[in-house]
Amino acid sequence: MAKSKNNQIKSKDRVKDLAEVYTNEREVNAMLDLIPLKTPDTIIKYKYLEPACGNGNFLIEILRRKLARINEKYSAGPLKTYEFFIVRILTTIYGIDICPENVSESRERLTKEIEKQFQEVRGSEVSEALLSVIRYILERNIIVGDAINATEKMAVVDYKIKGREIEQRFYRFSDLSKDKAMPMVVVPHKHFMKLAY
Image: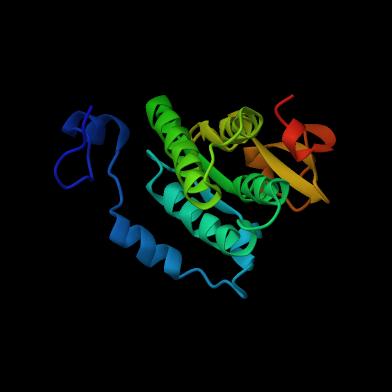
């Protein structure tokens, strides 16, 4: 289904049924510009959660900003370092939407943006191994859910980075507001390229 000319709605029915209205790129950038980042590198680790992500207008711009920084710092260096930082930034981008179609579109847009920029800066395609890790993270970080009325039904993952290894801690979304939230599941540290296995 194509979006309307103004790119803010796909259909009147979706506005009525899902309260779905997309934010224009100009507003997305204006809002993201308001977030104070202490240093240029802060964007690499800064975590973003979009609780009504739609098809990913905020998420794609967040990814572009993060990629711009790692492209500047790491694209000319060793391939594994660049791949690690792609994975690193993905562990900091989260989205929730009530519409499965929007969640799928968000994941696809982010994957395609990584593939495009990887090709531009490295001159080659993303490896299947890295694509598997990208998809694995996006399937856990961009999820179907109701961030207002059903937070106890959603599990979210937090990533703890140690060197090139990543630990995954799964929490009930509703528990994240508690002082000492306890993870439901902890997946021990794995090398970043083995997250999907």
